[in-house]
Length: 132
Length: 83
Image 1 (tube, rainbow over the protein chains, first blue to last red):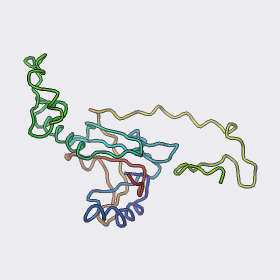
Image 2 (image 1 turned 135 degrees about the vertical axis):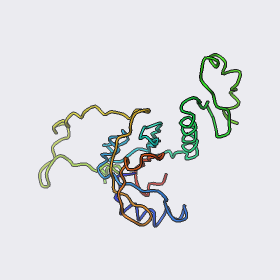
Image 3 (image 1 turned 180 degrees about the vertical axis):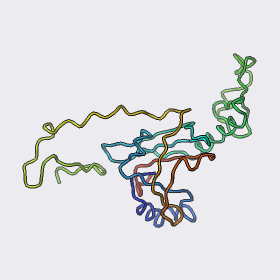
Image 4 (image 1 turned 30 degrees about the horizontal axis):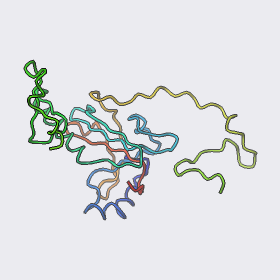
């Protein structure tokens, strides 16, 4: 979503993005002329008249589970967004009985918070696992 | 040009064409805005409906029509802006 019109979205997809991604952008490109939606999400910069690089993860119940907002010159890291969604999906499937430690990836150790784990995380999780 | 505005920063000068510009200090203060509420994690997302371009068609997108799926909503400064 940006303040650009759908007509400009089409031109950008036709002339540039479809050269990066075969078939063009696969998801809807939304238009927010005037920045009202961006304002509701706290990412619209009225001085510049544009929206900052906000990214919101919204779950199937419409609850915001996470967000990240960057100023324009620095791009995001899509793999990290996907990792976070995978983690939120695991937590949701476990009905909140499991949690994912720092650096978690699918298939890696999860934690089961409860009385037995208090003060014992050091026994099962090592700092080196953050980057494995 | 001595006074070229930065990209994305068009603004009225505060005067009318053919009249001397009022210095900016003399302009009425902008109305005080309601305190902006930042999004909170764990709380419902603000719903919206927006025009959309999707696979060759002009269409519309309403967030609440897509409950039941995981959604990533991304904002960016502008089409053709490099990053």
